Length: 333
Ligand code: PBG
Ligand code: ZN
Image (cartoon, rainbow, N blue to C red; front, side, top):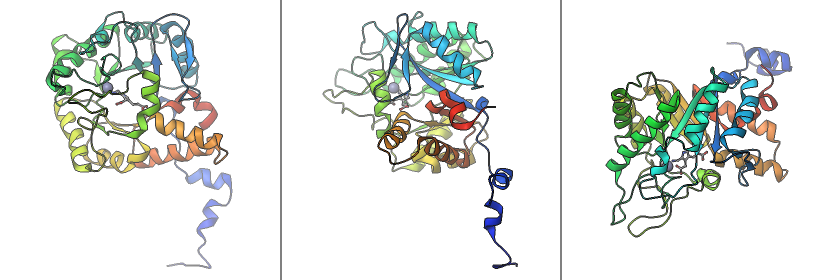
């Protein structure tokens, strides 16, 4: 074998042109999904304090924001809703036919027929305690009642025209319940993207601030989601969550967060033939901005380098707040 001084690997890296010949590419914007926030009302665009550059939109202003994202070629959006109605134990405002999400889906599908519109299916922004399921009188989580509620939410999104419904509550049996409800109601073309391997993570803080959906302390229930979201110290259990969601009828699996869990992205990619999404979450977004603002790193470089990590891990779809600035970070396509 040829070795130094004949072999010099740096020859393959010397110029930008040579590097570009052999480097992996950042996926085209069609392989990206922009998560964003919808609130009831009109004319609203308010910046989220903990997520600079990301906003809460009312359905009307969301259309012009999405237009800028569609113009960059981004293939899909993922909508998170809120209510101005009364939050209750079961989160019933979540399946209101004229909720902010349901309205936004209708508007986006008529304005951008080729855009893939995804919706987050959960209850935590609609329950008065901020948990992703109703609580029983003793404070315990009512998993099976949650599945019925989540099926109603998914149906209301499908009826509004969502292409993809994405349940994120981490309830046992939620995928089977939603798939059955979709089938029974003739929504046999609605895709089901399971937040399948979703961890109880400290990286959701900015999102909960944006959504006003932090879990609250109740007698019999702690102020966290560790009892239902996967444990970061038990990768086998977390992987099995994806195995089961596939068996229950998911079309797309997901690992969330992405950057702290690249091993799990790779593990899920290797054990399924379904597409795998990686969700680069709010905390991962805001920590890069915070670093750059401190002067401790260059934001563009940090975004490109961390995104390539997600690509190397094997993600098929990248769900990321950076999608709204695709051209700035990754160039024009
Ligand atoms: C709701 C939900 C959360 C996120 C997506 N859907 C928060 C949570 O589970 O508490 C987090 C997304 C992000 O941090 O960007 N269940
Ligand atoms: Zn939730």
